[in-house]
Length: 162
Image (cartoon, rainbow, N blue to C red):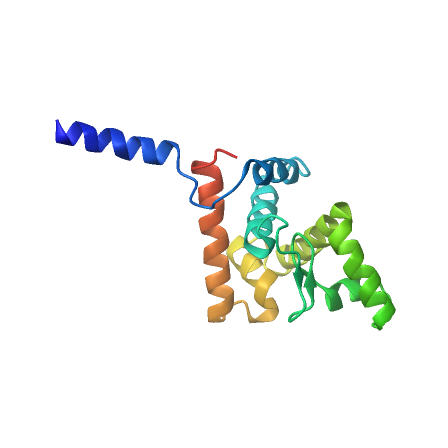
């Protein structure tokens, strides 16, 4: 009898767990992100990065590293991609856009991911590591980041059925 109760308890916990601590609003945002592309790996990568980098939009400003938005795009990278001068006005303007224009923020993340996909020839582990660590993708920081993205993707697929 104890084994049966333990089994029921374990199944209940697995069926109703929320290991990433996502709210209903977070799930709606993630489903919207998922709908933006037909590329399965890109879908999961964008969702995982949104969770990892900004807690699905709850922490969109990192003044220490100058990363902004849902996907924590680095302002210097954004300015280079936009072919504009790196000055206070442009930094404020594009930081504002990353924070308030989800399409712009998402487009920047996709461009960054696609850049690393081309460099690493579709090796997603290296892509994830480079998203965070750039050319130092083999560093401990890059490897740990890639592992955490992979763990989030597994949870999204198998725990949340996204």
